[in-house]
Length: 274
Image (cartoon, rainbow, N blue to C red; front, top):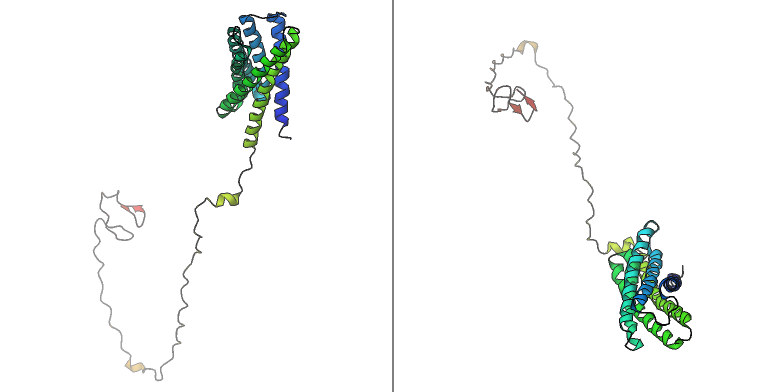
């Protein structure tokens, strides 16, 4: 996919959302007034901000989170647009270019809604993108109103609000594209990760000692002259060996002395109780 496709989709969505918001605000509140008062401008700004926030939040939302992101976009964008329109209406007596920074508030609300899908890192980048887009869009807004004048009220306001929303979509699209490229960065290969691992000593083969072959036994050779039968004498009987005395606490199997109570002694060699 082209890297500019996401930016173009944000730009188109912001332009149409701004036009739809202006259309709702104009039909409900402004009603073709040549110079709307401060509350009317705040309500129109709320409509434009709510549509912008909802449109950009839906683009950044996952398939299972569209409804929460839609509500977040409506609330954040609507509050930011209302504050921007209110600040712009309060500065009506000042030169027109002084009202351009007021639309930064609308951009901040829309940027918070668009960047909330990648909270918390995406929130700060969304606020930065929305603020810059609101400033650039505010300058375009004031320039178009000054250029059109009072001759074409509806055309001038519609074009001005669309020009206000397009830079917000451009900057938020750039931030969304940068975040997508960061997430899709390739994972380092195993060879690259191997450099950071400590060296492991190779395992030594097991050496089993093999006994040396024994010396073969010599064959028994008969004696040259066997002894005469008359010279054979009976061997004396071996003296009787009395068995060694066995201790009372000795193990019956191995004879190891084990202290304890009879019946509860436990020989660890034979693994038995006695």
